[in-house]
Image 1 (cartoon, rainbow, N blue to C red):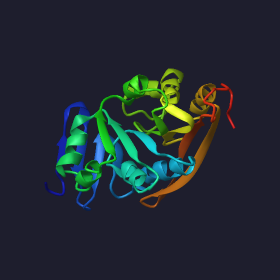
Image 2 (cartoon, rainbow, N blue to C red; image 1 turned 60 degrees about the horizontal axis):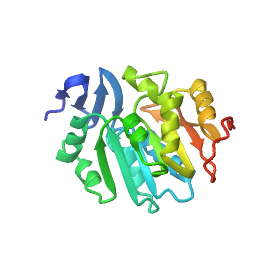
Image 3 (cartoon, rainbow, N blue to C red; image 1 turned 45 degrees about the vertical axis):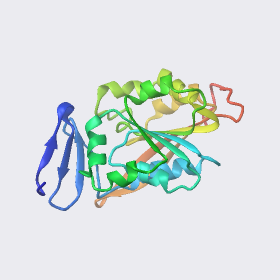
Image 4 (cartoon, one colour; image 1 turned 90 degrees about the horizontal axis):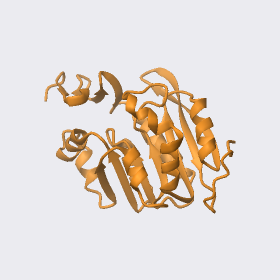
Length: 228
């Protein structure tokens, strides 16, 4: 593939090999991520795992270019990772090496890939299946690439995420911008909630991204109004 070639697929998914040597992923013409700035994807994993004393079982909603998964796998406490990705071609690019670091990540024996809608997977998961659930399927509730993803930030889907998470576990949602309405909804679902901001430098431009965290009490009983 040349430095200017792009791959376009149904639904508008595009993987571009740029002239600067980096890969860029777009969906419906909207920039999603690239391989030049990966700190946000890694921070989702590292900061989320820091919030749990023993994150043995992890679910990641959204494969992207694999950097959240890569960061999760560097934590020696993690025994099993389920990655849910709705775009089968993105998984194919990772497995085939079109995304060069993909094969090693997906070949890790701890990794299981599900090509599906993460909202469906959470709804159908066994109760208490995961210690940590990381949701990074879009740019946040205010900057949707796919309108259908909006439901993932609402109470029914978040309640499904809670049901799939073990007592003492956490559900962490990534957002490109501050989302007070999301924090309010999460406060209705989880025992305690918190919005965590972190600064990033995007090719010389300062930005602030957000992690919205929902905690389950060790007893697993929701208080329904635990916003911190």
